[in-house]
Length: 208
Image (cartoon, rainbow, N blue to C red; front, side, top):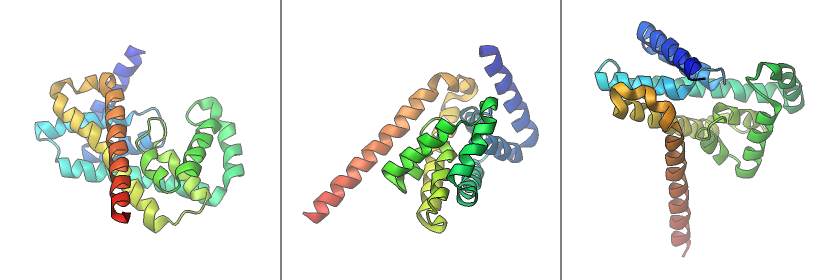
């Protein structure tokens, strides 16, 4: 497994170094499509290059967020046009490739049913979920040019920023991101939880 991860890290590094921002966009898009290209590694490498002065932080955040939003729109329209039953049958046929499973659709659908529009934001912060949360939004015909795009941009930005900053802080040790990825996941979710509690408290105080 460690050898496989090492090969992936090497391939991602070579691709970004040779292609610059274009390579960064392609890799982040592939990762959001749930292909075996971990966005955590790509974003951390970008953070390291920001620290080296090779990349601009603003440009990295802009392009990686754009890539994530573009993939989210693809998933949204898959749900919108194909529908739930047809999509489940399609995913069932490709499960053997272990890229996407029907259970992933069920997980995304359950989250959307429980939290509605806010699930778009939270879903982008949950490992293994990401842009998949856009599928039930499309199935339910959630208005796209409103809360969907807003929550997608905010959620993608928070996720991307967490790993870009981590790579920046780790510097030449950015490849250790695999060891710290779970900590970033928990930290981001903790910040979101605190934000939700604060927002609810402010609303309650305003009503009083």
